[in-house]
Image (cartoon, rainbow, N blue to C red; front, top):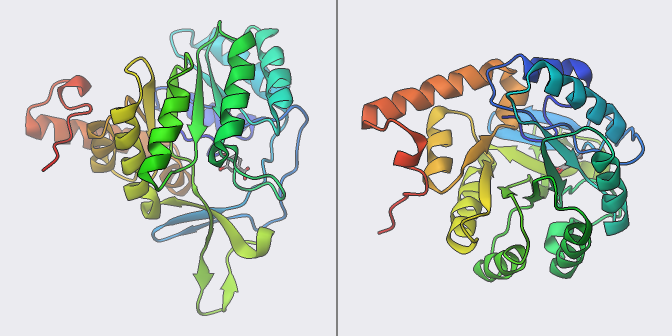
Length: 296
Ligand code: DHB
């Protein structure tokens, strides 16, 4: 499926996702009120990946809930994801109240990792706030499955600490990873940054991100209770990348930068490439290799 933030902003984007061979889609991280986001240019692709500082442009949660409501009627066999990104636990409660008052019957992705709003740190790096948000959320909202989108972690102690917090809650899943926040890509010819917001700093996706994403999926799979599933996101450009994410423990895989570069045809290609790899190895189902990465 798509990674939140790619091919999920407008109805036309979501129609393309709905008509693609992706298993599901997630809507753009929504706030209570619509937002225009940061000034352009705010997204650039490069040969190795992408940089973005979108700043949470979105049409507001009701726009996405009404889209999904219709999609649920048209293809009731599919499961849909709605992503929300409040600026505080109170915001998240307001967003969740709105979802619970609608006919939404899918999965909620609580985004704890947007790196692009000026003055707002990434929640996922503030462990006390993560615990406070999840305490607040699960005190009131348990009917619908809810997962969290996390930033990448780079330290084994942080994996231990974050997994210990996450294991306290009835989370449906953990999605690792969001972009590497506040990287910098430079054009050496023009001697400029690539995007306008924040002096050019932005979230890094694509091939740059894959080793970090795989480490996060693998490290969380080793530490999270088995009921918490894992969505692997980061650097998926080929069937081999999907295979590696699943080998590290991903139950599902999302595509961001490659989807932005290639459009929804990417899902057919990735599925075909994954099937070929599986056939070559004699694997008939995902469970034959999921989480079975060998160590030395
Ligand atoms: C944006 C970027 C993110 O990585 C995210 O998780 C949410 C929003 C953005 O800039 O719009």
